Structure formats: structure tokens, C-alpha cells
Length: 80
Image (cartoon, rainbow, N blue to C red):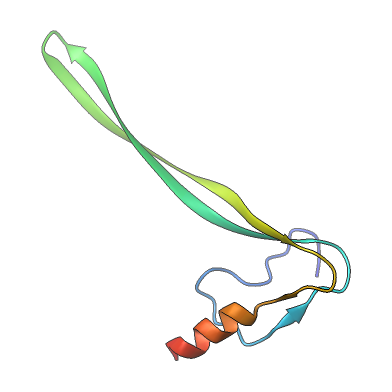
């Protein structure tokens, strides 16, 4: 695999288990954050705005010799 290559994504059907031979692998997910803010727009008038953003969150790092994909394989077997 190449640097920054996605091996599988959330919701993908997984039919393989991997063993990392060399290098490091990051397991990441997106987290959505939302916040509501209220701003005055007149003497007795307020406007509400919802701000949403997604951040990429690093769940863990897989090191050489570690196995990955087995949990997703088991979950995807349960779905089909």
C-alpha cells in the first residue's frame, strides 16, 4: 500500500484480514461536532446559527505484526 492510501472505509464490505508487515497504519474516523450560537441582530431580536464541522480523529495506530480487519470481517458477516 502507498502512503495515505485508504485500505477500507466505514461501511465497506470487508472480506480480508490483514497483518501489517512494515510501517505504521492509522485507524481514523470522522467525528461531527455541532454547536448552536445565538447572536443579537436587533434591539429585541436574536438569530440562532448552527455551526457544524467534521474532524478527523485518530482512533489508534497499528504497528508491524499486528492484525487488523478481523473485527470488521466479523461485523460484515453478521450483516449479510
